[in-house]
Image (cartoon, rainbow, N blue to C red; front, side, top):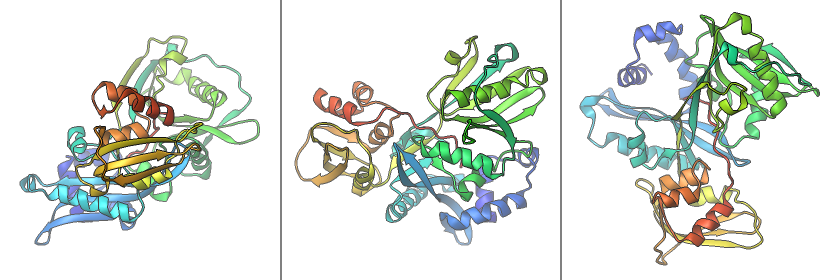
Length: 387
């Protein structure tokens, strides 16, 4: 663990001052991470007794269009510079993916330090983070709602219950167990707070996680089931009007905030956030919920994957009328072509088939693109975790 932590701190240039600023000491981080690492699949290259390259995979679960998938959360990726360009990381990633396949983790998430690097290995962008700033006078005016907002402890069951209800209904969300919650809070300081919106039936329909510093209301995340919950939570934020001059926050869906505000001239910045890759294409498809239709649908195509042999070759995708999918390997020839990166971002709903075809990421006739458009749900993944 000491070598693992030292390698991470070197590669990502985490200084003692940065650790101290959020209340951590190095030995405390090692103690905090140890229970998580015991549950993880951790792989490394050693030169003698010295750890020189490493990856870790957390056992996690995510919701994909109403289905629960086992997911491998890839993290802790790093190699000392003097051991780079030796193929060590490529071999570690190959082994990590094979291990995920054996464990039934048919999809993998990661937060990229280099998007081009992971694209070459088969991952693709599947989610965004929108950062915004709202000046005090731009805050929404209070609007009556039937429910009420209550402040709760960040480590208490109320917040976890609110998130669980939200995640089960939300495409792409991580279903947080103790491991995932520990990672979610790991780099936050102790002054984090939370409030939950309860509907008239007493059910938690939303939550906001925040902290206040130097007259700035910082929103780490805000989740809500419906418009009442959204309005109620913003009523809560606006109630801090006399204490703050600015609100800063992050959004993890594809819905910019500006349109919902009376004064829409706020500052918003969008950036890629998480990447994903399908680990085992046939197994992923067997669980994937396509849209229902009045007829059965098929697509013959060649799939390319730079790392996983199970995803390489020609497949016949069969989609039944009730939305069940099956990917059958075949020796038939097909001019249609797609790689695993594009397949992942398409099936995750981040980019639509029509757009991907227009930019040359799918080689297929218009009839196939129409078929895919009609078969894949329209919803961009929500991923607010960090691991």
